[in-house]
Length: 269
Image 1 (cartoon, rainbow, N blue to C red):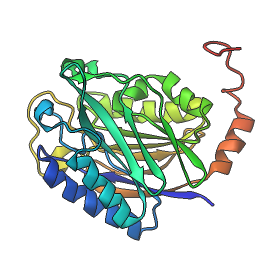
Image 2 (cartoon, one colour; image 1 turned 60 degrees about the vertical axis):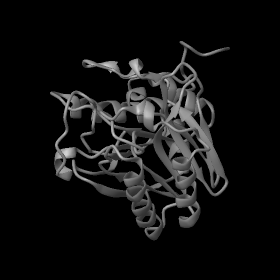
Image 3 (cartoon, rainbow, N blue to C red; image 1 turned 90 degrees about the vertical axis):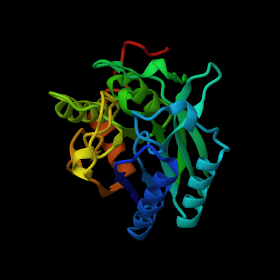
């Protein structure tokens, strides 16, 4: 049976407690629609532009504990972006994946030192590829700027994943929406995985004025098939996208377009 998933596109603010209310509401909506997995954006804990050090919490802290309770109450798996303390005084940009039978986390590997923003000043990079299993479906975790690095998504596929989830808070600017759409489709196609790309909504579409250069989202979340075609997409504003992930389609596409099997560079033999 296909795995029903939900992508919750929203605009978070600087207050982690207020953002938990948004996560609870989005998770309840996803559960009512039959989802087994709901994915929230990067920085679901607090939007970029917020001082991250004072709000960062460990994975056993109160914010993550409440996300676990939200997932437990709804009976599904939640993936949400948060910030955890790093040993060097910075924070890590972390995805928490939690719910029935699932408890793991991923620290963003590729930091957004681009377009005039330097994420590495306050955020320490991760180093581990992370996947988890949900109802027989293996799922890889990636975050925002990771989408520019195809090797991570191929690593998901090599680990057995048929779905990659990509929470993001994409920076606005000339050509940035076009890059988001191109890169998400390319990563699905060159790893032959389903890609669930869920971004922060455009603050303006939520009635919020964004200040400074922090990447605060453009919306346009999408579920993309393993052949690179967009199956479902949202616009700029908040919304909930529902979709069904068919693992048999991954098998069929990989049989037809054997890009993983045909690789010659970067493969241990």
